[in-house]
Image 1 (tube, rainbow, N blue to C red):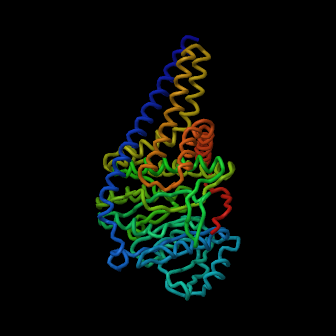
Image 2 (tube, rainbow, N blue to C red):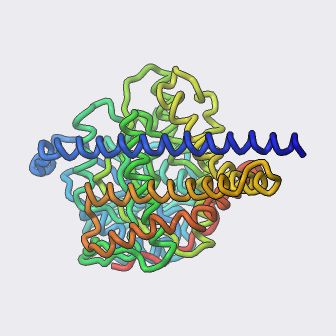
Image 3 (cartoon, rainbow, N blue to C red):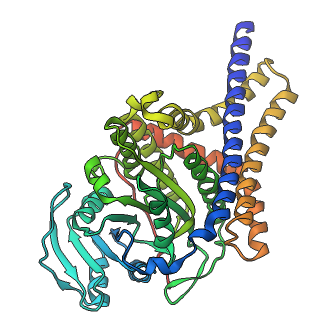
Length: 467
């Protein structure tokens, strides 16, 4: 019993050290993100010259939107894409073998006609059935192809793209009209830029006017509101912080802008992973480092893409399971980058963090509670210490979530109503009691499924964005 108690005490100390180290890193990211956002705001007025973007002096953009069974929201999403304010762009919708009326909705609404234009084959993808264009909307191209999943559809869109930059978005997303203008700022500042990510926000609960976001509101459901806090934390101090360290590893698959030639040189999107967005970003890092090519991969917090998120437990659990499998797959594929100075801060800081602080975090978190409880039961620690650890882990999580809400209020101020900010603050506390532990369980199941070789996406139930 004595040896068992000492062993459990040692494990408990390691768990506590892990929690301290991880949360210290979170706090550092909060501070870095706040300073970066303030700096961005200070120089923003210099680039607030919308007139220059109405010319053809800057890089043209092909917006690629893969669509699979999106009949509920496809028209609203495509209209939003066509309404962006930029001089030189095209919208390429890739119907990835939808089994519903997605293609027919597009044909009927935009009066599409078959188009026999040439399509190069830089990247592999499933066969294309037909290409369509619209006499009424010359910037729109629709590609109908056999189902091959999202990465395959994106590769088809990249082949079809005629512009220098590509913007990959989900077909159920709505871009703000000036979003491309803001993203182009980064490519203007540094010609070495090969990829830029922007903020993804929840469309659930918002109201619409003329096919665009009119009033920004929180969803009414528990799951919707708790995800609103998650998204703020993830984007405002997670990705802003990693961008400041020049070690960004994730650009959301819902919204990102890439140099088309850089993506083609790196091999495009992989077909056999469920984390194609993160994997491509890591591979871009690897490709440029191995070939000694100057590059930057950036994130900016202003450009906003609005997307529908799951509001039922079953769909949300599938999504988080898939995200964790995608993380595990990316880290495993590129394990040769771990702790390698040759890959810069991505190899020495970011990848070790994502391995220890993200991939293994749910295991440590849930097992930590169990080990502390067992240590108390066996007398290795006293009840006061056990309660202190439990309280500390929960309260610190609350503080970090609340920091994201406050950072949102001090910078973007997207939520105009004071009641929405108060609700977000409340959910920043509630998120850490129950939901956080449930989320950890979903991620553990995702890790187990990855080890079992599971690669399917799972069914994503959507209500559709009504405008």
